[in-house]
Image 1 (tube, rainbow, N blue to C red):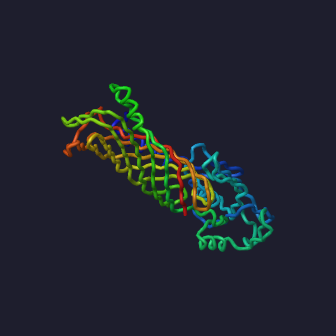
Image 2 (cartoon, rainbow, N blue to C red):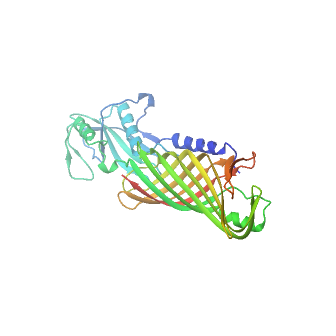
Image 3 (cartoon, rainbow, N blue to C red):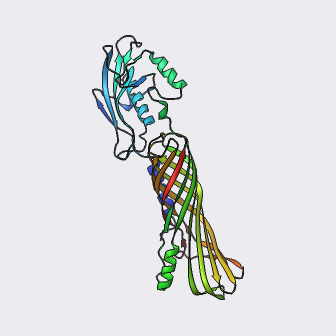
Length: 367
């Protein structure tokens, strides 16, 4: 069973991982730069430019995956390239090789060359991929990119999706152990009751390519029945067919990290949140009459998940996800078969453990 504070500790650990991961691995060739020399400047960024006589090479940089990188999106890479280029007093950054996030790495990786113009900055540059001449001065390229709301040298397809609506459906397993002093029949009954269906709904707003905030609702449902059961509650005993149904629901804000938010690209996703965790247990005895009792309670719960989603179309993604919801009840409200209600407080080691592990498939609508 979980301790009283383990749920909060686990959330803090995941939040730390979400927010403090390493950046790109930087490999410099032909030059040296200290981060203290970083500054802002106006600099041109292009892809696959063929070197001409009016360009002087200043150095080469390679941005890779450091092994456990979180802040390594294309946006972050462009920021590093610009800072390195400005520190070198370069006029042009030429991206010669790039790799977008894939199954082997969640990072954008690239190789780029820094150049200095020898003469006029309007001298035509030929690209290796198209037989066209690019004649615009540096300031015009930068201004045009600002007006189009995109980075110099990058296409509109590089704009990330800001909003996501999601739904998941799958199976859940409660992790609390069963009491040792129960019969084999009871053990089989409650083991089945610990397994159930899981559904979730969420909405997220991404304020950059990788991080977003949103709201999550997840529900767990299970039920089971057993014939010829005698049950006593508050000095009242009844007999008949037992039907028991359990519901656990989580609702709260979440912080989400994704490897990339780009149209038609798969991505990894991790989320964590704190929220309202509600527990309901409905008990029904069927005999000549239908007699009902219930147990209800609520507490603070934590939510974490990890998933991967593949593109189905420009806006829809399908994927698989594992999630963990944690929480514990130290008191609950009991309503007996006669309709009388009272609050029951548990001892320190006798709490109701609501922790469950979920495996699901999910559909995401991103725009």
